[in-house]
Length: 65
Image (tube, rainbow, N blue to C red; front, top):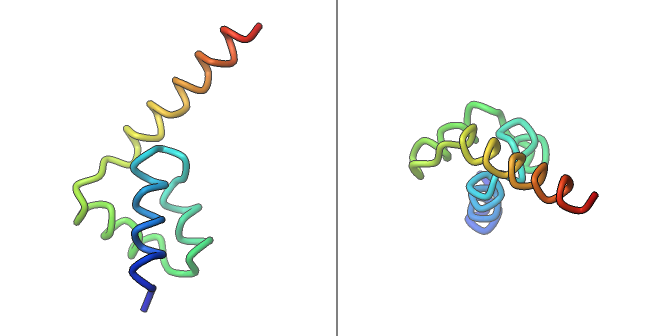
């Protein structure tokens, strides 16, 4: 069983788009399916969050040029 603090941190990372389901699963040491269930139960759209995070990151790098 994963500690509640690990689950909370993992959900925050995914909600912000800073980590994918696969990355969280590897860090926490559980299956991708379990992490996907966490995200679904929390109402997260991990793919959309990741896309938004990467788009913002891209925009920042383009402005810095």
